[in-house]
Amino acid sequence: MNRLRIGVLASGGGTNLQVIIDSCERGEVDGDVVVVVSNVPDAYALVRAEKHGIAAYCFPHEGMTREQHEADIIECLEKHKVDLVCLAGYLRMLTPRMIDRYSGRILNTHPALLPSFGGKGMHGLNVHAAVLDYGVKVTGCTIHVVTLEVDGGPIVLQKAVPVLEDDTPETLQARVLKEEHKLYPRALQLFAEGKVKVEGRRARILGT
Image 1 (tube, helix red, strand yellow):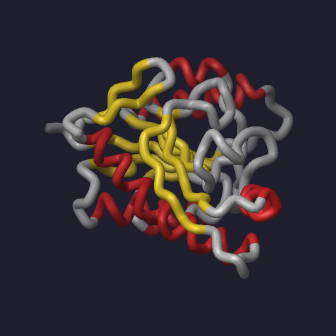
Image 2: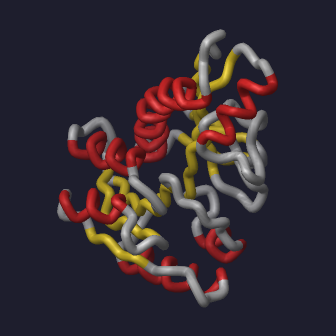
């Protein structure tokens, strides 16, 4: 079986990127990160990529339309023959062109149990603050396929995390992130094994 060729889009520090790289290098994922793309010139994700000998590119978005900006990214992903695109703290909304080009092959991680606490503005500590404000007893993380609906794509995997009485957004974020770092590689391996089949709103896991 051919190894999965993974392209990662990241805007910041790239902790999820590092987890993906490490999982591939340890043999937990039958794939390789072949290219990392950022829209932020000083994103540490680019440094992480270079440390592992992975092609790293920055395409700043200032002064460009979303379509022009993504045309450069798509060309880059095509050049590196990417099979699967992973969003790892990528803070740009994707256009229909990008989503159509990689239909069913763009993954994102979200620090809550979707469809709860998703959508516009729900990222980073905002999510965990909303979880605590609402008073739910269980939160978690979700790996999902990206569609035009923000945080509304088919769910591949989820992991529940209890909310503790003395939690702050920061402590909750740290606990959820630990599970997120375990869940993302598992989802990638399912794709590498050809076990994910997207049918409408559902992502079926074959053989389970």
